[in-house]
Image (cartoon, rainbow, N blue to C red; front, top):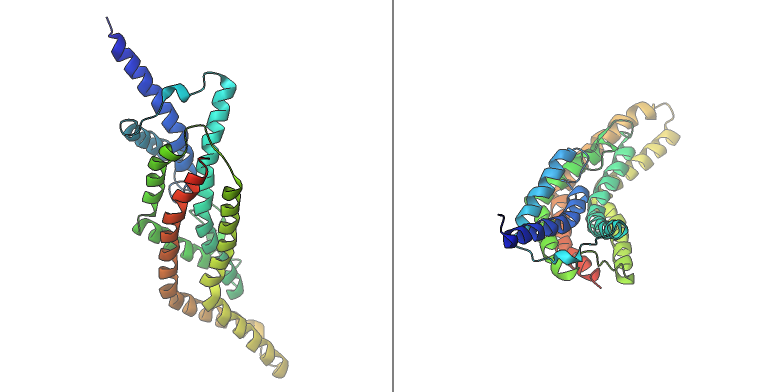
Length: 263
């Protein structure tokens, strides 16, 4: 005969696993790098299951918090999805700034038509944007940025009870400040190359007016591409520390964002 205590323990552990999966899954599917479209869904599901199995033995959750009705479970799951999506979107704003800066510089260089697939967002971006994105992803992994998510995930069970999400005015202001910082960061990243290209366009406009015999369209495109590549390469020395600084700031702000959604 099966021991009743063993049966209850197994049922409680399974319910705890379901509660943990509803929080781990959205965060893994939405987080940068692991949540990108280039990562197969099977890999994301496997990572979700492995992380959840590890957390079952180290996190105490009350199985009675899991709703017994269909509507209650849907609302419970929606709350956990909103929690993971909010944290993931807040982090993706940094990568969005990198993509915006790369797109603008690429268009200024005249390489807007030469686009490749971005592995992070799954969209077409100019080659310069692809370069910035790849460097940002490598930096994010090298400074253990993915550890920020998992650390926040583990501690979030103490701050936000499962299914008890509170999107307050502070959360809204934090997201708006993140969006504003995204545009500021994009301008900082693109500033060196963009400024040189603006001066190059102005100079070619003056030359076209003063010496109309020079074919500006033929001369200007390779000149802009050359200047853009040179200053994009030089700006990488400035790009690296500013991204590390933003990832470090993200490590401080993400736990605060999670604590703010605990009510």
